[in-house]
Length: 302
Image (tube, rainbow, N blue to C red):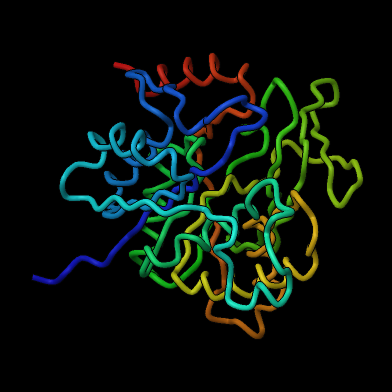
């Protein structure tokens, strides 16, 4: 019998939830008290994923292992890894002598880097505190079945990802013929109901956005060659931010760098974009909880 190729779900769950006011990854929002992470794991397994890797803070492991056991079952491998401040590519100490100046880890690119020893082959990469819907994992699994080495992204319409209670950060995408052309990190995006537009901060300036713009909600599909790209990107980021206490290396920025140098790294491109028709759900602020609970009950409740 041929061994099934590993199809790994990587969940970034080390965040502190500063705007939310607590650990969002532990919030019980599903119809039966499930976390969003548990719902994603269930959806991914149903779509054909057979391994789960959680990137966490060490103090969360025992709680998560217990709460997720019913969703993972006996046939799915569950691994934990830690986002540790000094888990950086070789050579980092020639750029910065220490990490004592940091008040937080180095961002989502660093989080995924910390999972490199736990993943072989194709992987989906998501946030713990987002609900992507069953369709997102089906699209990624179908893409990997057709081309296991191709990078992918599941996109959502911007207007379906905003919060009524404050600004949000989003990766705004330009897509041409189903392929990703660019992804740019915008900050503090808010809807303007009067003009039916959105505005946000890009490169330090306030700008307008179309409500139907496609956005990355950190629902990526990568082959394991992403780790060599992350290595170079993190070293470059450290060189540019040697003493910054809070600057973060965002995963969309790493993808954009790969796009920019695609002539030198053709193996990672093109990046296929698959657009989900299901709505994304997530909590950025405490006030989002009631709405998310209600919508999940409508979608998943019996």
